[in-house]
Image 1 (cartoon, one colour):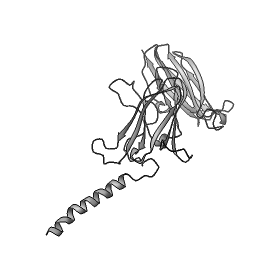
Image 2 (cartoon, rainbow, N blue to C red):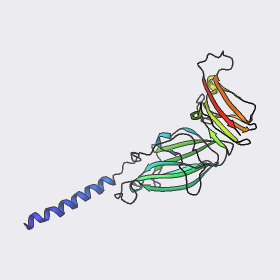
Image 3 (tube, rainbow, N blue to C red):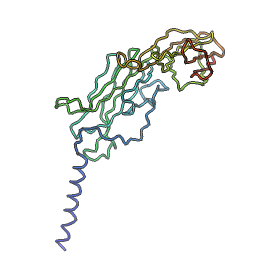
Image 4 (cartoon, rainbow, N blue to C red):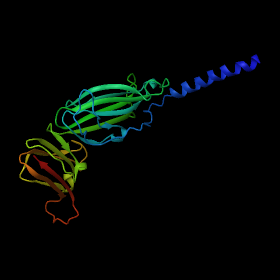
Length: 266
């Protein structure tokens, strides 16, 4: 009976050791992101405050992308990280981007096994209009870089106005506004193809600015970009913003991509 009684604690010790070793296995790569967090590309709907409304979250699926963003509005970047391996994320942001938060979050706060890993979370915002880049590299800080490290690059195309930002997802919507407010519209455009947005607006809308931003400044020729229009509401009643995407010298066929937003103003 004494001999059999020793088998249970010995087995438990071996099992615990196996779990800890498995949790601390060093792969040199970020852990797989099994989170159920949904990535929502585009623009947060509300203005962030001290108690924090929902922010748009970008993860590894946004790596290499350019996303429109409101001026000085926080968004979240959340990447898998396991500091127990010695690997961590180190970031570098353009001068036109502010990083308000940089922290590690365990995958299961309060109940995580040692070495289970979690996420590196940044809360960032564009403080200068135009394309602003956020880059990160996953490596051991004490080791020289080899060029094989996992990297992350997100570009925020920051609007030039404090007002609300609209994108292609707002096509066909009716959006009530007050007279005197300003807003921005950003739509994908690739001028290298000869196609461009021909945007028109009713008399109660005034165009303040109109600019094209390459998606990768100084990068691949023909990669495309975004077109931004900054607009001020200057009249009451039903106003419309309408655009058609085509080559300027070609006849309209009715098969072109279009954008329409109706704006009741009071």
